Length: 396
Ligand SMILES: Cc1ncc(COP(=O)(O)O)c(C=O)c1O
Image (cartoon, rainbow, N blue to C red; front, side):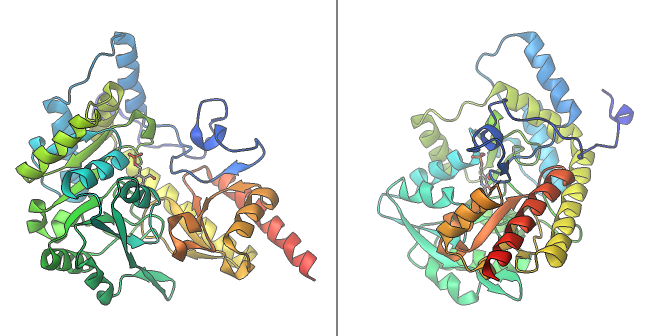
């Protein structure tokens, strides 16, 4: 399809039946009448050009080992430049079977068992598992919730002293925080001072709300190219998670070699041929689709915020600046973490990501995935409202 002929409008209201499709989100939900709003994939069909590219590959009928060729690398470089004003060289791209695999690889490549690896909590739970599962120790820096927004106090940065690596979630999952240039400069200063390498996980970097700017870590601290890596992927942005294709950007030659060696040792570096096709199509044709998607997600966030204000004032959504994840403070319901989980599942009939899995500071919170048609989001909120009302009636 030529670029000019493309249909520019996309319909994110369409409901696609995902039950019975081996979907972890839908088929992995314990009961068919529980609505899944948990794992971070979207209930939207992918960009038509991706479907077309995959269709061509299926018709070709041969699925041997894949090779990320020049056109693939150029598509990745073009996307980073257009969307994030990030200049990268094609040879810096190291393919990985997912970003979590890259986190584990980085931990193995640049730290030793017993070393401390820093994270900023509450944070995406595989960060902890990647550190502890590799025999390293978690060094937590805490976000502070102030006036409805998460901030990292300057004194927390001192806790980087002694850590070997920082797993930086940029934008931040689950808080939906998009780190500013100034905040990242402070983090980079501390990492320089304490000689801490950084893995900046930028997988959510394409989901940015109006008026907010995504600043890749390398643009906040250009010298950080020498001591940090960026984890990028089309998987969240274009709903391609199960194609297991991520692009890890490593500018420093020695770091790239060390990373590739560990990848090879673990047998994890071969790209997926469907992932290559999908990523190339996404990064070549996907700009308008992502803009429309971001507008839809933004309106879902606004819908949810308004709904909570009017129907469920006990719950407070932390205003997200990016991602498609709503982090909701449910502490006013007065339940401990396990009661809250049972309430959500058994009374509201919702499967959410329990706040406590993101760290103790997340206890009493719930993470809602709002990358779904508005009608599904409304149904989830109606179920929650009815369950809370019932709770209030019982208390009277
Ligand atoms: C911050 C973050 N990193 C990584 C991942 C998962 O990446 P992958 O599926 O490529 O391993 C997620 C998924 O939700 C995420 O939120």
